[in-house]
Length: 246
Image 1 (cartoon, rainbow, N blue to C red):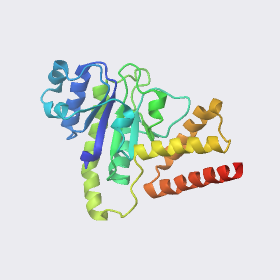
Image 2: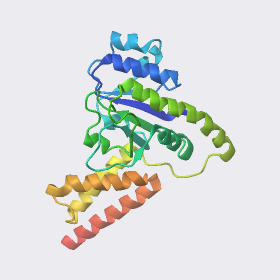
Image 3: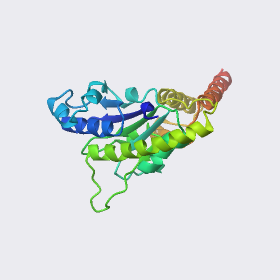
Image 4: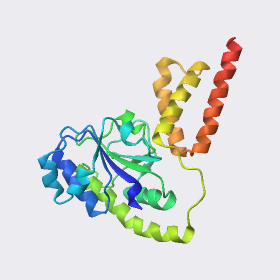
């Protein structure tokens, strides 16, 4: 059940941290490691810190962008310790595990961890459906990235056993799959074009409006059928506007 979950590290500075994350993942039977523009990789430091999790490092996939790393994912969860001006729906590690494995099993999932010193940027969190926070000492809330990954992978590992039993009892549901990250990005581009065409959105305000619209639709987690309906509405509104202009 853990095979559909990716651990994604964004612009990791220290290669030793990549090795430590690989070790933490293998401890919990997880192997899908994606690296977005790591500063140094491969590295002897990474191999040394992996302490036998060489197979996880060897299978790590290096991507040029976060969009590339999450392209086939229907659920993207971003880990962050910092507060944000615009709030995201939040999950604890245990709630994250339950959502991924119990409530919405079978989806391709990415759990994204940011830079060691600054975490994820706002435009990267725009790509996430949920924000993951690890409860800890409010006076000292900074976790090493490998420790953070270990906590999350532990909850996934424990929950996977419970979820497997429940899935045997309930069986798979015949539903439309959730939209992938790539499909959602295409939808957001289409929406921005349509809102601009009908005069609702102007360049000076587009970034703020689109960020808030992303929050709305990311909370919903649309499936492919729902996305097709909305894309059809956007196409019709654009066609109606053009016919009126003529």
